[in-house]
Image (cartoon, rainbow, N blue to C red; front, side, top):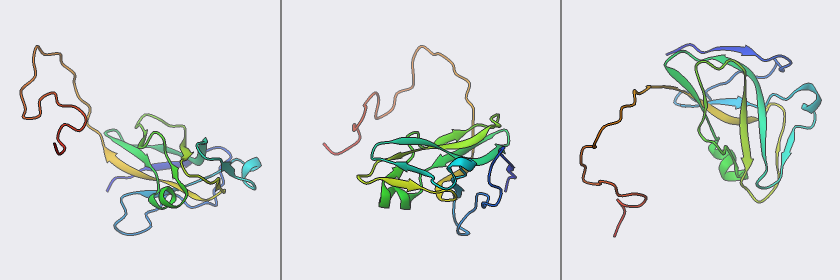
Length: 154
């Protein structure tokens, strides 16, 4: 288990829960909407296809060699069409600002996000960085240069 240092962002509501794993087998810890004081009473309402950046009130020190991936919550995606357009979003190990979650309403009805609502989940994952090298040719494979759908039924 790794330790993830968290700090409250300036003006954050520190009475809200920190990210939490809802079950012992959960891969993702839930993140909550943590609005500035002037939005706490109203939250944000998204029309279909509308996007918004939702603050979490959290800053993190992700250990070198790891990232935090921000992913949609499956129940919100199924029931309300709430998703994350850049899923998974990435929090890099050298970022120290407030974590925000870009959400989009892919549903047909408006979606309301209230202060304290669980809006996304975060997964801590290892990262491997590559060294890039130009070569004159690549090794051959059975698939070769077959593109989208090339391994499906004919």
